[in-house]
Image (cartoon, rainbow, N blue to C red):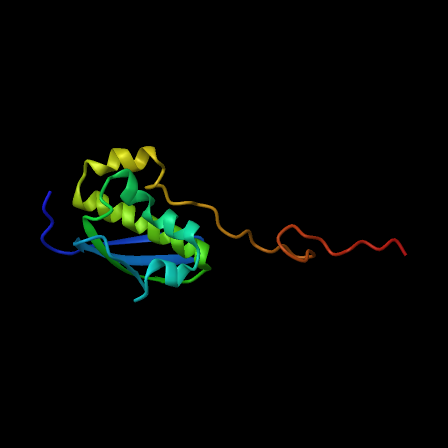
Length: 131
């Protein structure tokens, strides 16, 4: 498995979009020109991003450079993880079965529920007053 050029992939989660480029390298990951820990600030989110690389044993095989925008840091991490998984499948089709079994190729369809009229938020009601 020798990748000569860059591979492009996108991922989405909630209101976040991630665009990333994969190229052969030594395992360096950049998110908006920063390290993942510096950008996201949580070890759990960095572990979430690295999950596709761990299950395919490619932690030190590729460099990832990506841009994320929209939503919050949790949604951005989920979008980046999906983009990494999709890029790995473009590089090697044999990874599809492994990533699919771990649930890393499925886009999380949950989005914010719309606000309804007469309510404070989507389901929250205003405080009831008897008098």
